[in-house]
Length: 191
Image 1 (tube, rainbow, N blue to C red):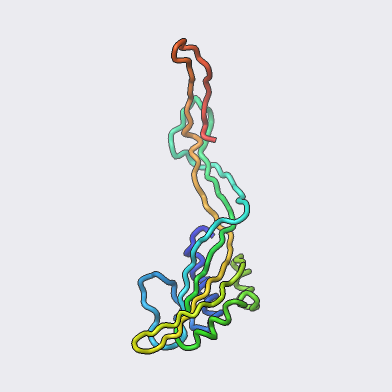
Image 2: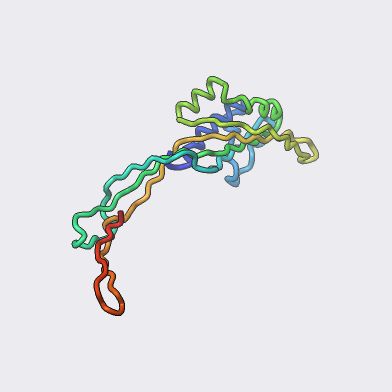
């Protein structure tokens, strides 16, 4: 995965399967959109990256020079570094309306369901743990709206690529300020 938005449709489907809410009633949180109207079961989800886990692997690929190279440095090229690591995420799920309590009860054991496990395996996503569901039921519009919240801790492999300007090197010379004697000279090639 290179972009967190690649995971949103996957987790929309996971939340819909886990809660039993219709796919069109499961929305990404914090988008400035209201929840679907009515009293039918609805859910929102938000994916938050937490931290990298384990040790990254690095791949180096030669790239077109981004800066002109000093010809005295020889035949150097820039390169792109692709870092692959495991990222831990929190998927925060909010469940609203009729059936929210039952839907919240299905989240902690969701990773044991065959359909959820197959979907996660297909996209190479792992499931660490689930928080206990929290009852956030509120008084809304003079009525009680059932509302529950639960956090799933998941992990996925992520890729980041960045450029190293190896060709933008330089030559250097170090001299004693008093005697003007050359102490050291060399070339830095950015690697």
